[in-house]
Structures are given as C-alpha cells and as structure tokens.
Length: 234
Image (cartoon, rainbow, N blue to C red; front, side):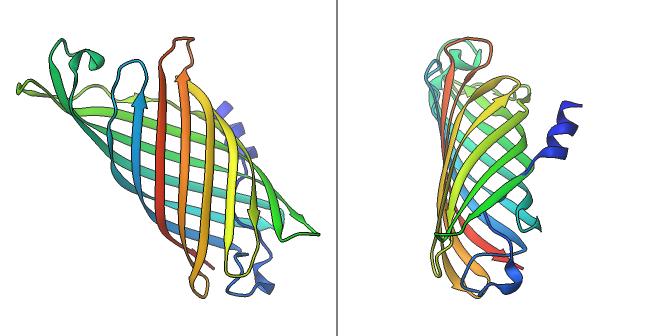
C-alpha cells in the first residue's frame, strides 16, 4: 500500500511545460526522452570496498498540466574491483576480485512553479525508488568464482530543486533525501544542457549519494555518478 500511495502521489520532472508556444531552442516540452551513459564510483567507509564502472540509462518525463509532471527512469551499472579485502564480502581472508551489478528504477512526479520575474522554475518531487545490487564473479586468490545473493533496497525519494529557462542554455539541480528499506541519506543532483538541434539537447549530470545503514550502524556508502547523453523533447 505504501508503494501504491507513493506512485499515486509522486511527481517529478526536470523540465517545464507549455511547449506548444516554446521555441525549439527553449527547453519547455510536453514530454522528453533521454538516453545516457553513466560512470559510477562507490566508496564504503567500513569495508574499504571501492568498485567503479560504466553503464547507462533512460529517463522519461511527461507534462500532464503546466504545473504537474510525472517521470520515470531506469539505470544499470556494472562495477568491478581487483585485490579487495575478501573479508569485506564475507569470503574469508586474502584478496578478492569481483563485479557488482546495480539496477536502479525510479517513478514519480511533482509540481513546478514558474517564477514570473526570472527565467527560473522551482520544483518539488516525490518518487518511488527501486535499488538492487548483486556481487558476482567473486574470485578469492585465484579460486573458483562465486555469486552472492541479490539485495533489494527500495523506498522513497524526496527532492526540491531549480531549473533555468534561458535560450540556448539550461542549468538545473536538486537536493533531496532517500529513505530506503536498508539505507538512507542525502542525494544531490546538478546538470547542464545545451542545444544540439531543434528539440534535441546534449546534457551532463552529476549525482552524489551519501547513504548509511538504516539500522544505526556506521556503515556508509558514498556514490559518485556522472551521466552524459542526449535529451529529446516532443
């Protein structure tokens, strides 16, 4: 029921509506679709694990009214690390090389307010967050490969942010908090978009998560995630 309520009340897009009157060089679409590549780096303060690797994702935003939006996204990353402490993964002593599969899915929405005296939008959004990860191909000191169990960490994300509406250029960012089933902590986003063609923008985004264990332990994971891709409006 909690998930259904979040999905029903969620909002969230990074763009403004009113696209029928918009110039193709001003980012105000009714809907937008983004495809991007991702590089992610994680650092766990307790275990000392620091995997990194690439992936990609897709984002979709839809303007239902001039002030109400829904959005969704999916991202997959494959991280890896060599010569890490095997004890950090519960695999005994010695060194371990391993991979980490990470899936993220988000769906939600929100409200945006257009500042009349400035080319600026202020938005707030709520989203349901699905996050899962699995350690795979863990090899200790040249031994056999082991896959650990997949872990789900689902919950909600709450964000507020700003986006500029300047012809030929747009900057956006948000601050928020993730409250997941096994972890929680702040999340920060910042991005910039520049036009490549009518209704087509190139963009770069940076997202930072600082999540700690929800059960009161000192276990803390910091994640740096850089996106680069193309966003198309229609």
